[in-house]
View 1: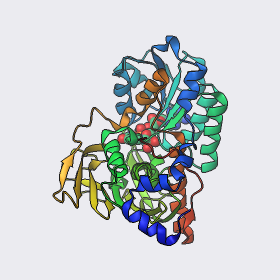
View 2: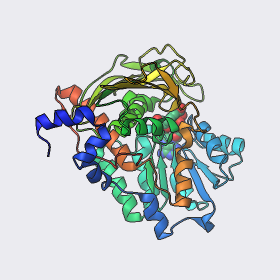
View 3: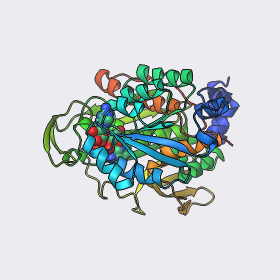
Length: 412
Ligand SMILES: NC(=O)c1ccc[n+]([C@@H]2O[C@H](COP(=O)([O-])OP(=O)(O)OC[C@H]3O[C@@H](n4cnc5c(N)ncnc54)[C@H](O)[C@@H]3O)[C@@H](O)[C@H]2O)c1
């Protein structure tokens, strides 16, 4: 164990990852978490002919318009069924995308045509319940975020997946982007010198235009819907959180949402729509995140292609690295160092990365047995951070974080 003084001396010259290797933490962390894909494939379950993964999607709202074309574009996936509690939505999706089987309830779906991977794109408040039913039925499950609404429930799902020897993963999946890998490798190479911290922003003024009441209810909120992206990226790059300090508030106690059907619904907001978060990653490395549904964004909210929009900045004592675009819609990475102080843009090829590719990504791994960079343990860690932010805001305390995940995400 390094003393305080030797800690200072060593960390002046070591990159964050090298530092963790020195202290033996990286090895310890690498043994934590699981790789459900490998466990599943080695047991040889539920992969028909080893050729195609049969997928059923539940939740045919806004995000399904992105997921379904992404799944349909993959030669190794058969999208066999879709389901929504508002059945006409599922029927419409089936018609638009030639999906052969349509259901109006999860029970009906599970009794119907067989499939391997359940893709859960239901409302945020429903995830735990649907994930649990899917896992209990022996399905692999990909869940939109969050995987559950409490750490206990999320852990229960992870344990259930292990017991059932099926895979379980949750969005977001930015750790699979080339820009994430580039940033992780740049940090690991020590190019920024001694790592100090980062700041990130993702927000919009969705209180004026979001379409579902669930975004403003328990289980929803700006942290769970938006902040989660930055939290996943920053813990993925800087390491698991040790403790969290946060502020979370409500600026608009009542909002009106216009549903997909054009119905106007008044919603009493009972979760955060304006939040700021400080994460202590250990060894003096800190990050900060600003998120909210009440933040006017100078770009169109989802215009990730804006070439000059930097949403994440990472600072070391000898360099700075900026993510251009959003972490879910990256455009490139800008880098300036002591040796090369003129900011230069790198990694502008997204290699087809799309934020909605997570379900297809894990389906591929079910076939190949390759390690998944996305893990439920990482998703659970981010959930604990978000809950801790709210708790810190209420109590005025730092909140210690107990969960962790297999880190570094990108291995040497
Ligand atoms: N819309 C986006 O751009 C976007 C982007 C990234 C992630 N997400 C995430 O995707 C999830 C869904 O978001 P959305 O925008 O599509 O919401 P949405 O309200 O448009 O769609 C959710 C759908 O799930 C259905 N549903 C709810 N409970 C159900 C149940 N028990 N069984 C079957 N169907 C049920 C609803 O009827 C609705 O059609 C959320 O977790 C959200 O954070 C959305």
